[in-house]
Image 1 (cartoon, one colour):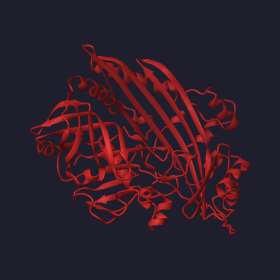
Image 2: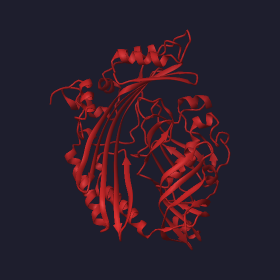
Image 3: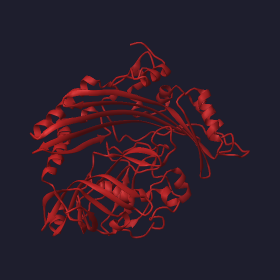
Image 4: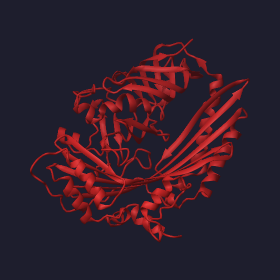
Length: 513
């Protein structure tokens, strides 16, 4: 294979000449740039080589960023390769790749941020970006960057085979097996689509206090959408899996449930009934219904909303916000999960952070700026969509811990209520926590038993208020592997969420008779 410069490679990819599983060919030996030391390195040397920079170049760029008196600066190098394939009814409908590459430079003075980025990693372009970011400050002093010291990351998503080494010929059989599984599950299926996206992201964060960290982040997302028809009536639903794993994870045991659930949640709609709305007991199913926890409660515990006193939780640290058996965590260490991080995007170690423990609000989710404001340690929640954006406090994997009850106890305790299985299309007001969520899959609970499926149902309420109404929590915690992309401040980042089975004493249910 012939060599190609980085600039030529990026230009070629941008013109749409790349295909799925494009290898990175910055060098005469393409695998040298993606050798195993990049997966969990013991030094920054391989990443310096990958991004074609040196400590000397980096320190000069940071000196330019600090030459107007900023307190601190960092450089966020990123290289992302993603490949997408769509299979529809056993035919490859499209396949394409995308490459993103660049560095973002942030300068901080007190709570003010100057930010700039460039897609060209030569000293001149990085110097220009640094001087742009430096304009946030206006002081005569200039703090030189410290000598660089490598911080080795944890390894919560080890893989055996890089996605760059997996060709399209290895992926098509996986998609076809899923497609066959969909069609075999129910004779009413009339259309099936299988989406397959693999992503490799290389990140290097360099801070003016001397800390350097590197991380390789894999991701695989599989999404199955199917349509069924029965007696002239059509229904459609979907199911997905998104994890930080390699191709070895894609066994029948892990793949079959994606097809099975997509079909099940589609065809149950043929028997679904409309529900008369009103206040009622609601049981949130383990797993996917964690989206309600994420949106209606989790965002209110991100530190920037509280620092600005925009969140209802801004004066609740140390106070009771739920029953004693309720504990909520945001966890960056959950192995292989979509929201897991070895390092956050400020080069802070990730951790499992208790937001609520035994009903008491203990902590917010912090990036470096909010941590400095509250005089606490960062919690590893500084995240950004890409090198084009500065980091802000964001969730990772947010879930409620197991409680003292069982699912069977909870269901049997409800005379008439709603069993909410999965959600889609919600809206939340972050400050007060008011929410509306559309139920994509759910059932009636009648006399302590799950009975008929329901459709066209909304849940309407207030997140902090619902938290106080959690009266039973089961011991069956499940993290949703479907994950999601969380939007905030114009940025989207991958997250996961989860719940055990939870009983809420009363939520407003919107339906139609």
